[in-house]
Length: 223
Image 1 (cartoon, rainbow, N blue to C red):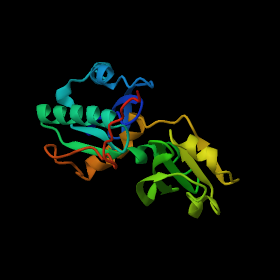
Image 2: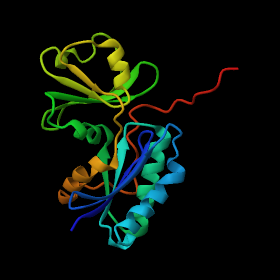
Image 3: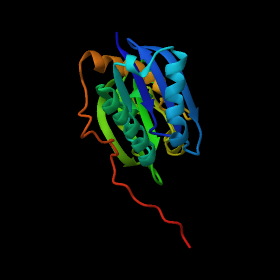
Image 4: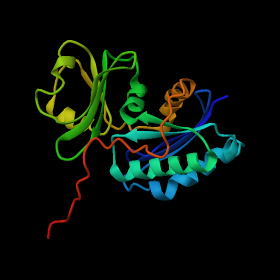
């Protein structure tokens, strides 16, 4: 039996799920622009465990969204996951944030392009073919009129995530569609983390760090 706790905190959505053998048992999440992860994450974890009528000792692995995404959100999620793994002696599984976002539209289009909003006209993005095969590496890129032309000019291409609004403002083509309000969720992590659990694809708990993709830049208010 693979009983896995999944934590997703890479964006505005604070999301926790409990899954058994890849099947969702409980999902608790709240998507708010206020980034209330520090207050809600451990409450959601306890609610999932209580609702499933198990104990923390019944868990067999902890999975966490590794990024890219919000620096603060990622730190909160990864810190919580590592702390649970150390305390309970459990393996740590990391799930690429963009991959779990792409799962939401898996197989519906020739290409799915999960995009997360970064600074200014920049997005974090990756490209997946219909069967969730990643065919272009994750990148941080500035969106312009030449972006993603290799995909949407000849095939149906769907942009999903918080960065899709920037794409929609620039790219206009009959092959392009959008999911503007979609956010990464621990719901989609269930299947992905179960597969990694079966493959024993675990992280080194002591040394694992979030995949920030870019260096942190401190933003200061203008006087």
